[in-house]
Each structure stands twice: as structure tokens, then as C-alpha cells.
View (cartoon, rainbow, N blue to C red):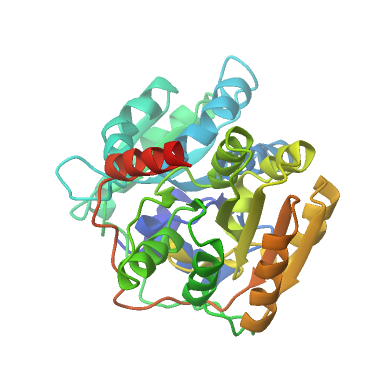
Length: 373
């Protein structure tokens, strides 16, 4: 089904969401039609943020909004759906469009397998009437379902469309660019060299995939690294937990701008805790690259300034590899919580692979290594 036809059948004029590769066609269509931050479309920091935006839209207009998300973000909507939207509270109707990663019967990455199994159940538990859009779903069928949904929405309840892989298409193409010159993989390579035998916690997506391949290319083992293949936005909190309990070991966190924005409150907790042995590196290319390159707001805010305000004693912003190497040396010599914002270009190798070890193997190897330190 074409993305424009889907939106026509739904008939809403406000969309907000967190980008998802499964919903790439819809995201591209919305960006091409409305941009990324307007009265009609806004890319949010996290899925709970979307629910708040949607509720505000409904309160101001009386019209039903649409929220799009990957199914991994369902956990972020449970509280506001249950305590804000629910018909027993404020009865605010919302249409959710959920990308179904890890759909049973389809191969996917390990972080999506269990989430895929419980996707429909979680929506049902939140009392959301659900319809699955598949490749063979016709426009006529979707129109019939939407008519049913309108009655449910009128009663103050919310509904959800769950989208299977390849079920939505868009013929256009949206490409985001920035003027940065550093390549993320080279940044990660420099961080790995500077860290040496220190443990590294890396964020979800291409950053962890690149770190894994860098170790393989160097002939190194993977015990030094905890690859946070899911749990977007939580790598820095994992790193804080490790740093506080291994005070004599320097702990490095490789983070991304989209992940930092998703749960920025973690920076406040890290800054207040001030572990002297933690280095927090945010690779900022201004996009959600791992799910298709849709923009974040990170190129419009001062992440280094946020770190300073949160209490990080040492904060550095770099835009060249030479500046990065100098900053990494300083952080190794400086016994204090440190923050590096690395401004990067958009893009990755076309042949970038995925970790060949399982998530469980990664955890066990990493824990054994930490125990030896």
C-alpha cells in the first residue's frame, strides 16, 4: 500500500513519531510532504513524548492525531496510554501506527525476537483495538477497518495499525545531509584505540556493529565491549552502573545523538553522580541513521552545553579526528567524569555486517572480563 493512500484513508492532519526502518516509507512520505517539525508532523525524542504531543494536539483542536513508532517503543507509551489517554482517565483518542519488527515467522535481530512475540498482546493489554496491515491488505479492507475505528475513536478509545515488513511503500526519496567531515566508524576506531583494555559500552544500531567489526579487523576479542543491541537510550545508564561498581577501571560509553535525546534525563543522573572513571562520548550526526537516516533535533541544540548544565566537569566538542584524538588523550589523563561530543557526517559502509556472537555470549564474555579487572 502506498503511504499517501494510507494517510488519505486515515484522514488525520497531525503525525508525530520516532522513526522506524519498518515504517521508512511512511516517514519519508511525511517528511517530503510536511517536513520534520511543523503543525502537521513532528519527529519526537521518544514515544512517550509523542503521546504528550498528540494529547496536546487533541486538546487544542478536538481532532484525532496519529503516532508512529517501532514496536520496541511500546514500552515507552504504556504509562501515558494507561494514565493519560485511557477512556477511564481523559479519554483522548489516538491512532497508533506500529512497525512490527520481529514478527513471528520472520527472521530478525535478537533484540526484536521477544518484542515481536508480544507486540499484539501489549497493544491488547492497553485496550487498543488492533489491525495488522500486511503486503496483501487492500485499500477497500483498510477503509472498512478505518470506518470501524472511527466509532471506537469517537468513544475516547485509541486504536493501532500494526505494519508488517514491506506493507507500505513510497516512490519518493528523502535524504538528510550535514556539513560534518568525520566518519562515525573512524571515531569509534579512535575511541577503541584510546580505551585500550578498558571496557566500552556502545549504543544500539550501527555504532555497535562498527565496534564489533573494528575488533574483528584488529584481530582482537570482543570481551572488552558490551554491545547494547536494543534498549535505545540506555547505554549511558549501563555505563554508569558499571563505572560506579568498578571505580578503579575507566569505563567508556559510545553513544548516539538520537539515543541521548530519547532518555536525556540519564545525563542529569550521570552528572550528579560524577563517576571519575567514566568517559561519555556522543557521536552526533543529527539523524536516526540506523533506522533510515531521519533527522533528530540534535543539530539544533547544544549537547555539550547540556552536559555542562548536568554537572559533567570536563566537556569537549570536536569536529575533526585531530581534535578527537587530543580530547581522548585529555580524558585518559583527567581523572574526572568527561563528555565528548563528536560532530559526524551521515553514512556508513554498505557492507557493514552484524555481530556474529549472540547477545548472551556478549554479556557472558563481558562479565567475565569485568570480573578479571
